Structure formats: C-alpha cells, structure tokens
Amino acid sequence: MKFFIDTANLDQIREAEALGVLDGVTTNPSLMAKEGITGEKNIIQHYVDICELVEGDVSAEVIAVDFEGMVKEGEALAALHPQIVVKIPMIEEGIKALKYFSDAGIKTNCTLVFSTGQALLAAKAGATYVSPFIGRLDDNSTDGLELIEDIRLVYDNYAYETEILAASVRHTMHIVNCAKIGADVMTGPLSAIKGLLNHPLTDIGLAKFLADHKKGN
Ligand code: E4P
Figure 1 (tube, helix red, strand yellow):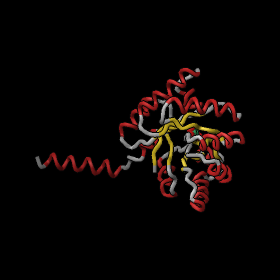
Figure 2 (cartoon, helix red, strand yellow):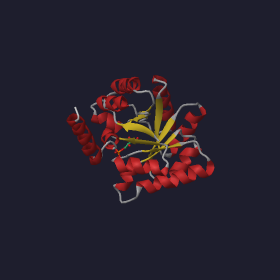
Figure 3 (tube, protein in one colour):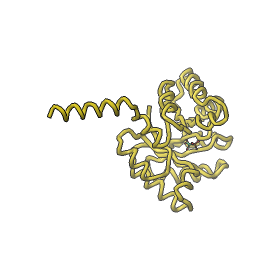
Figure 4 (cartoon, helix red, strand yellow):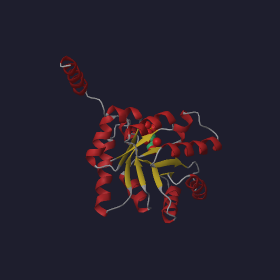
C-alpha cells in the first residue's frame, strides 16, 4: 500500500519523506488555508515547493465547479510540475473533467467520494485515483472501511485500474485496516503514519537489551 501524507505543512512533509516510506502528498483548499497559504500565486508556488520535497504524486485541487473552469485550472496545475495530480470533486461537471483529463493523459484524483456508486462513476471516467473519505463517514455513524471494501470488490470485478486512495484517514487502525482490505493508497496525517511505530513491548524490549549490553561491558 502506498503512503501519502495529507497536509500542506512543509515541515511535516519533510519529516515523513525523511522516514523513507512516503509515496506522495495530498492537499486540499482547507489544508492550504490552515498553513496560511492564500492567493493564487502563493498557492501555486506552494505546490511547486511540495513537489520539490518529495518524489511521488502531489494532488492539487481545482476550485472551479464547471467543466471549462476545471479544465483550465487543471491544465495549469498539471503544467506546474510532472508530479502534479489534478484533484477534481465528485460532481457531474467533475466526471466530465475526469474523462477529459484521462483522454489527455493527465493524472487525476477524484475527491469527496462517499459511496460505491460515485467510485464506480469515477473509474468509468478514467480517474487515476478515487478518494473515499473514511474518517468523515465514521464521523457520521457510517463505517468508512465498509466503503473501501465495497469499492475494492467492484473494481476487482471489472479490473478497473483506478487506484483506491483511502482518504480522511485519522489514526493507525484506519491505516492497518485499509491495508488488510487492499486499498491501493492511504493518505493521512503524520501522527497516524508515525503512530504505526508505537508498541510498548518494543520500548521495554529495547531498554532491556541496552541495559543488558551495558552490564556485559
Ligand atoms: C483527501 O485528499 C482529503 O484531503 C482529506 O483526506 C480530508 O481529510 P479530513 O476529513 O481529515 O479533512
């Protein structure tokens, strides 16, 4: 399973990259705003900065909600850097844009996906990635992981190449369960990625090994 980090914070991206397990980055307008990145020029520069920090795909979201606007913005974003993946919302105009970019050989990430039917449409439109938001479903008393399972089943039935990018990941068990189900990618915060390191028996075991080594020397 590929690991993407879901942030626009350059320090966190650097830290995840330094771990050596990072495959890409996802951003969204809220994450950009959280870092205080506003204004078209700054946002564009920030995408380039992120691309220069990592080797994998970097999702950059369009703001337009009409087909022509999405195409114009998406083409400009894709031209910024070869690692850019154009993030398109799951709406009617978005489906048309996904098909357009797929035909043009431009990578896409279909965002704000909350149902299997939406994921099926995204695959048929040729999306590179589909992003089901599992944490936001959980927040609404709906099992986000069940959606990943259902999409996996449908995509496998027809050998769709669209990659399932489990998004809105909140904690380590989301990551572990996504891997068990067979999500192709997960995107989550640095805390969830680094949380995978944790086990008290590892800490206790290491302390004992180091103490015993000291005794013998
Ligand atoms: C996905 O690409 C989104 O940026 C993200 O995963 C949303 O997560 P949230 O529900 O934690 O905001």
